[in-house]
Length: 127
Image (cartoon, rainbow, N blue to C red):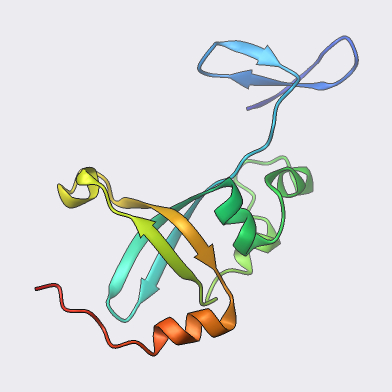
């Protein structure tokens, strides 16, 4: 989390809850939770760095620099509302047992041809 403190070189400091210290050398990374809906239902998909950047088209640092308010939703993210995206997700034991409602995204693309190709496939039976 950003703090109001700066280091000796006037760089902003960030507080780490894990080590309980402030640091100036940090790397912004994505942790984007997308609520995804289609005709079959809805689910929460968890996207990290490269996969989130692939569909948002901005780095986490660029979006953080846009506004330092942690509750602010950048326009690049809100532009995803209503957009068609193809996801490959990972389903683990916690998802199956109902302990986790978030599915980790292994691959995400908004390539129109690929999205359309998968949209035309018949639905698979859960039986």
